[in-house]
Image 1 (cartoon, rainbow, N blue to C red):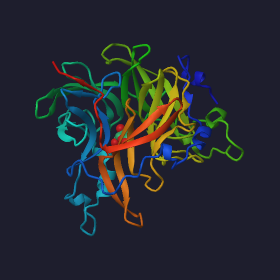
Image 2: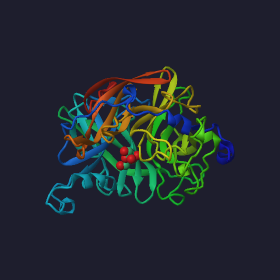
Image 3: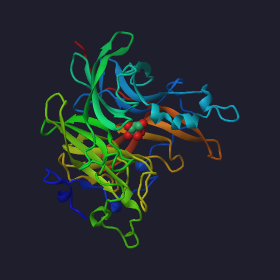
Image 4: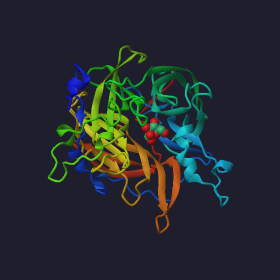
Length: 424
Ligand code: FRU
């Protein structure tokens, strides 16, 4: 197997590995790392649209920020089609499951506002139709830049391709609500390079998305996390000793796990405005373990770097498994080495009785974790489900050294501000 230095050249760091041995420690239904059951009687934010990935407005240091007392979130959003013949089944009923499953292809960025950090009111679309260069507007991060209300929205422009982009606009408040103005010129930042990060040509199932810019509390520089896969033709990756880790007898066989190649990418800005970026080797790789480490983000706490990322059961490799949910890793410095939290990496997973109840968790610096409701079983048999497309109850976790604990649950979509900015 090629070492990381051979593969990535002379680099400032070695990617940390999430190994198969680490993943063998993942256990669903441990109450300290399991999201409380979501009731099938959940309220829905909107009957007109589905929402999923939720992106709270924040500053470059990661603080969730309200403006003039208004909380703001951005969401991936798609129209619901209860009357569209395309989604009416042979019995004349609305096939909400199919409508929901198709949503990724028509995802658009919307924003919502609130005085209370919940009960969100729909503001509207962030960019007018035709502004974004591709069909899909996928996840990213809205950053409040200053007291003038300028906002940089970093997101992923998908289909064709997948490009990390940004668009600048401004948040404007009145006593009645919030509007987003501008957001008219989308600037492409970078795409997968095929040397560190896998391209579509190397693997049609590649992932390259979900930018999360931040200022490193230690060196003060501007960086960005994103989701990627390790470069190389699909099927060419080696799952060697390092990727396997220290496994017990009977766990040496890696099956077809060479097809799972997720990584958490990082880039550094060459300028102060974040218009010019250089990709660096991944911070963390999961070759032989999992194919997706989505929406990576940090919490900086107690002088440590807590790296969180969401992943799925279906993206795990042969011989390892875990629930849909958020996983985490901790290091003493930005470039690692990173150690899986709780030994395994699992921080907050769905209970096995409701494996798809929530997804796309975002751990905020105050320990609150927001996510959306995907589908919740209804009735005794558990064969029927209710589709969500709305905010899940917020969960609080306590982060202590290399461990985390679920400690509380709050209202649906509760995302309180950590600081308020009065606009000039
Ligand atoms: C997570 C995610 C993101 C992506 C978006 C697409 O739920 O898969 O990685 O940006 O959803 O809808």
